[in-house]
Each structure stands twice: as structure tokens, then as C-alpha cells.
Amino acid sequence: MTPAPVCSRCGAQRAEGTPTGEALAWVRAQERGGEHWLCPDCARAHVRDIEAKLPTEYW
Image (cartoon, rainbow, N blue to C red; front, top):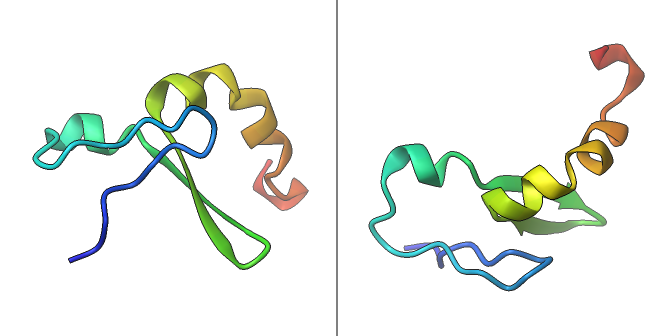
């Protein structure tokens, strides 16, 4: 069993048994060989930073 994600910005932890819709709002990033998570609140607050990392081919 994998551990519950922890937000790399605020430290919030996704609770076991979180409803699927809420669990899907967490953002997973792969940077420098490591896995990082953002909770829904931090993801909304930093959406511009997330979009800036997308390759230009995406747009």
C-alpha cells in the first residue's frame, strides 16, 4: 500500500478514504527524479506556475 500524498507546499495530507472526486483534485508532479504533490488549495493558488512548466507542444 502506498502512503497518502502530502502537499509539498503546505504539508496537508490526503486522508485515507477521501472521496474519489476530492482525491482527483490533488496534483502530482515529477521533478528532479522525485515525486511532489499539491493539495487542491495549493494547486489552485499556483496554477500559473504549473501551466508554465508544460511543454510548448502542449499548447
